[in-house]
Length: 559
Image 1 (cartoon, one colour):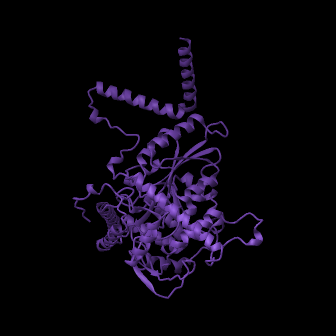
Image 2 (tube, one colour):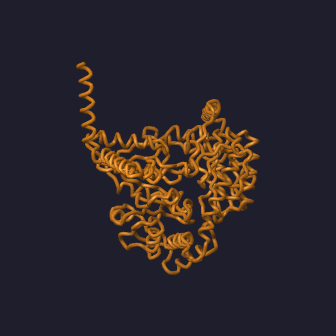
Image 3 (cartoon, helix red, strand yellow):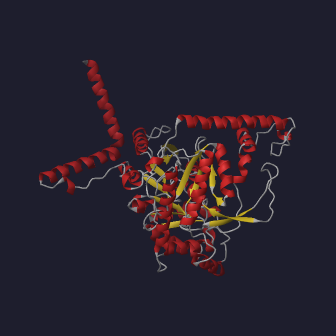
């Protein structure tokens, strides 16, 4: 009996302590829902039907949109991929020994023998991997272009006679269908209103400000652009930067400090990861798009506080992306906003790949999910994908943007946006908004959605395993084996198609893939040509890994 009493007392004590720590956040949420339940009881007593009372799912009703798909392969296939990597490393070691004894000429860069007592500049494994693995497929990466990366692009021809260590350029070029560039709305054009107005801005303002923002301020074009971005997103203010990567990495440290906690998605971009590290804040990672994992970390953070100081965190910042560029998945924004409100955290949304490409009018995943932009504390995006330009922005409340104008290192150590680039973005964004008096922007958004659906569903119908949502213009097709990357990269180029192949370390060792980037500039004939080539290579290589193709077999896929 005494043991039961002690256990009850201990439970009551722990509950009371937890309530003290989370009363403002967790318990306040519960109290609100208790009040809502009481109101519902009163309504039911008053004769109001349950259908008249609106309900809200805290984890977001993701079923209203195309779900994210991550089909798993068999363990046998996974083991086969590991065996392929093992064989690759075995032959790499053999090649190392053969080179060391002089049978093969060593063309790699190595540490000088005079500096053998110094700390090495290169990691042994990274250098080994680059010499023996990456260099063998280097020809499918780093391909130089000599035209605008639109629906088609001109590639500079090159030949290597020493295993991709050096290249010779015969002076010719090859025109290929471009499914490897981020040109979602097709604004990467050498002619048209965007190009014309950008050229005119050079006559007015030049090509560079040749100084920092804090020394001489912004250009007129950038000031106009910042106002337009705020209007486009439906927020109070916005600030633009000349580099998209730095928009994340340099500004995250201005928002949090060592007394804060960052909760980051597992697949967040490298710029966000660097920003988290530079901020000095504690960082915890939740499983990709998993609301249960995110809520568990939020609850533990509030309940237990900072383990370093044994005090509560002063600020909790959730960082997610709109579309994940390697997975092709779309974040569950309604669920994240619900948890953010429940636990009184802040939300940082990176819309680099979704702004312009998602939503009925191109306003990103916020519009795609029908959310209020004011529920997102920090709206971030880049201009390199949908606007055919460069740079990035951060938008939100005027107070937040004013703070960044003063505190951001980019204001002290980098130049403001180039005037013609700012004008390119201004013109393309005006077209998306319909400010040019035409429906060109709306037609581009609709065409991108049509192309994305058609291309994804056709790949699935053919038997390929595709990650992500059918609404996403990023289409990762899994090929798994490292040797497949070189095969697809070279064979697609031989069929005059330029695509991106991705393998370790950019992805997990067992998840090599071909990443297609769909554009509104692509015609149905171009997409069909790409699909025919992929289907042929998939049959040749046996890389149709999906076990769900029967679900699409008799489906009539329309463009």
